[in-house]
Image (cartoon, rainbow, N blue to C red; front, side, top):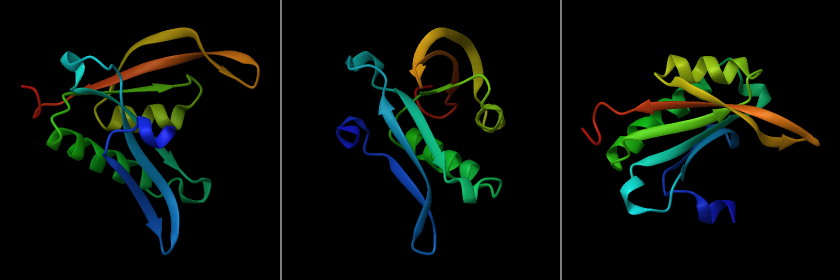
Length: 124
């Protein structure tokens, strides 16, 4: 199901034969007028953090998204995930708001910060 819901743009980072990170785009809306809006997800394995794997993946997926005609990327991050927030801000994302109690993790309601980045190439 996860694989089915992703856009064709998916990347992995490897260290030898081991996958140490991945990035994927998911459609945010099903309506055609929003075809240029996607949610970006990036994951870096614990042992590879702090080695610029996240920025390499994020930069590559942003370029690929623009080639695919995507004009807006968005991401949702828990407020205490300061490393992800810093990564997204460094890549040009801005906070557009906080969605209150929208996520549920470990039986607890969670706030999620919504960030977005508008392309200067696609959709202009």
